[in-house]
Length: 202
Image 1 (cartoon, rainbow, N blue to C red):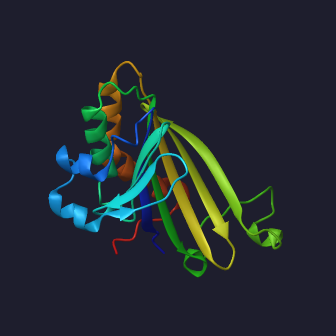
Image 2: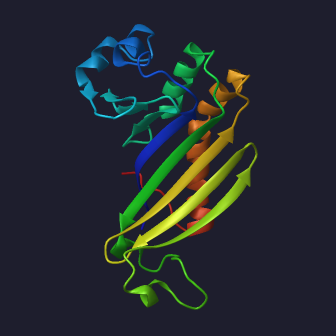
Image 3: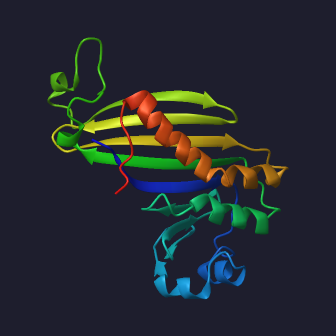
């Protein structure tokens, strides 16, 4: 059974100022349109700022900026790239694109699951979840993939693409942020190659 994409995010690691990156600023700088402010959703954080605007949820603090969406077709990377371009004096040391896929436990029947030696998931009946992880080097990115099985409930597959960038050359970070679409397509390919599964088109 194909997995459904249900979460995607782009993260840029750097000292961003939550008093600068606000919904009003994003509209003023044309990262979003005026009509998107109608969907403004404030959040609460002890440090930094959290808010929703349009289809995206944002977290901004002095360590990173994150744009996420429940629909991977919403390109989080383009939004983060625009912020990096506007705040070109902010040093960015890494950019990541993360994609999560999920299906119900019953739908995964017969597919690949974590195994320890000759012991499968069923042998760990007292475990709340069982997982398997691997790191893959592809071009300029380190990809961490994780399969999490919660027996009787769901199976989740995650792909985290990390691009290290030179903090003195923010053009590298901007380019990395724009690779959102490339990394998403690669995640879909790896679903087939590693997990013998496909992405649902629903």
